[in-house]
Image 1: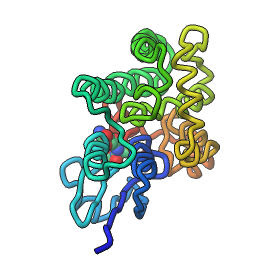
Image 2: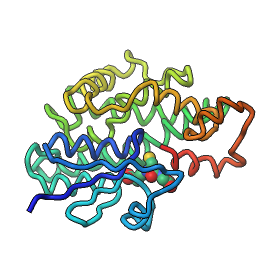
Image 3: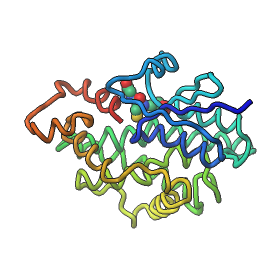
Length: 249
Ligand SMILES: N[C@@H](CCC(=O)N[C@@H](CS)C(=O)NCC(=O)O)C(=O)O
């Protein structure tokens, strides 16, 4: 029986992208279902009733949620092109950096700096730089977090290789100084241009439009409406804004 593999994602989500990369690196055929997060499909709600988020992988009718969990599932299910080393300590290390990427790097860079303004943005910079420095130190002398080949930590942190430049362009704020972060800068280039990774980046101009709207505090899917009515404000409180931003990625 042919395998049925489906991925629920959005065109722009960095969490969705890591699942696509993993499946493609392993040569697994799959179908993509694009979700509109402002109007989630009954299937998404059925497959991920707890978080109601993308990405979701559905393999022969069984759903797997949370992108890092999905990567582990892909690694265990399709053994070709391994994404994790055999050695238990190295394996734990790869998982550590993947988790650090989500818990600390994404939070401090995206939410802590690029989606903040003025004084708050300034205050967020030291934490973001500190987290990037940890990555810089981990990468010293290595091509990828996974060594000579792309591994699970590279996929998890992969958004940095593309989205960081876009955040920098949208906000006019340079976070990654190549002289201070030579290993991370080299990794960014190497990863972004690797076959399969490179072929699957979302459209740059569309992302710039989207993040410009997000950075202006306005809904991406309402971008046209925003352009027509630049005065429109949709965020009423700080706490609303984080979940609001997350919902549209
Ligand atoms: N921890 C989750 C994060 C996924 C996530 O934040 N997905 C966003 C899009 S990038 C989402 O579906 N948001 C919908 C919502 O929050 O309602 C993962 O790694 O899969």
